[in-house]
Length: 559
Image 1 (cartoon, rainbow, N blue to C red):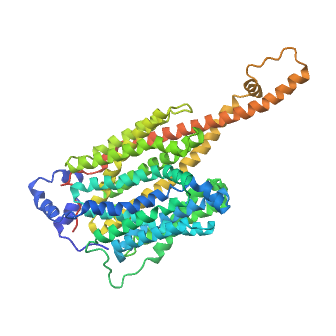
Image 2: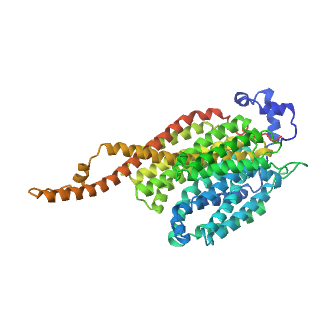
Image 3: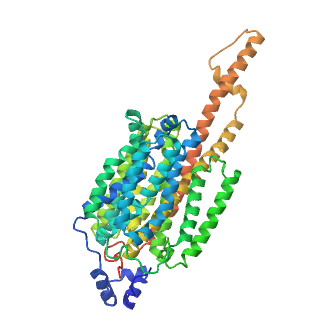
């Protein structure tokens, strides 16, 4: 739904190129600039209290996407479930989450953002409580589905609320503060979940959401208020039922394929082929329908704003790197380095600390009025350097090297996140802020799901290739020599020599096969980190796509 018709001068100012925006000090643009500044959203009187209120919910939502991963074996024993069955505890949450995120802006616009946020937070708290009390696998999957549906709305809603709460010159600082929780939660999740499971019980991974969620509910009810334009419904407006169905089919099947396709050997399985086909068909139908429907579920017209669409493309690549490396690092540390969940969490802690520091640094630079769009290029250069260093890891890599490289990677990722978020949302009308935040987070979430699925498949396929190459240069006599290193058998009877040869061969084969598996996996990790480094390197010039991030030039047009 479009805003009230603006005058021609405001429309012209929206369509100005980056070069014209840079020359905003010229007399021709003075009137337009004053018009923008007069309509800048005023800062809320309790902006930091509001920020804390709306950040708590999303932190719990993101935390719950990873905190249960390390407790799955314990849950498997409680429910007498197989590995494939217990995986639905994670899959159901991710599927529900992916479906609801893009619908958040539409629901908030019709029924009120504060009302929807409170309902989502209350449902999330209740679902967390019943997840902790679940007595069967079926109950747990249903409750996790509800938890994912409820929690999805909090991420884009909180982002939109903070963008409207803070004045333009502090919007990057707001996104940095918001991003701190979003970056720390998934890193801390496995470590915290492992500690809770070992010292208490896996059910407390859900119970801890209850007191924190109640505190967030009280704060949101007291301090958050909707703008006047939120919740207005035009008479005779229709519900986009076809859009909802297409959205559910597209993202639901896509998430299931990404999460479980590897177990089915991808397109060797008939259900993966059918699910992918229906998902693609639903996506195409959704796009054509949403571009024609008067009140669509997803506002695709927002993509006509060049800066927003550029930020969407870059954040997809960023999500690919962020969530892909976040998924691979714990696997490498625990499966191949033998680290416990607690020790692996300590190794990844510098990444979170560096991310927090660099996010706040980016926010303060923007608050001081400096043009920080070039920091996007610097951020991806840092990310590329960190990933290139990680491509040189081996099975003897020291803990200090792991922590240092993680620190560099976190600094680069954290530096780019608030700048991209503010660049994407600051150029959108306030009336469309909720739709823009939903679309932005949908692409981020989809990029993460596809990235994890692709890198998982790449890890296994490259491991097989390297294993085949290593085995080509190995013989059974090498196995015997390894098993009987240092043993000399002069004058032994022939039958005793043959017996030791066969026994030693079997022992050596087992030992060497284990070594070959580890080395081939390590080489596969190196390939992946090298590929991610190249992607980050190619993304460095993306800073040229964004207009100046100075407050005067990045002010959102509100009328």
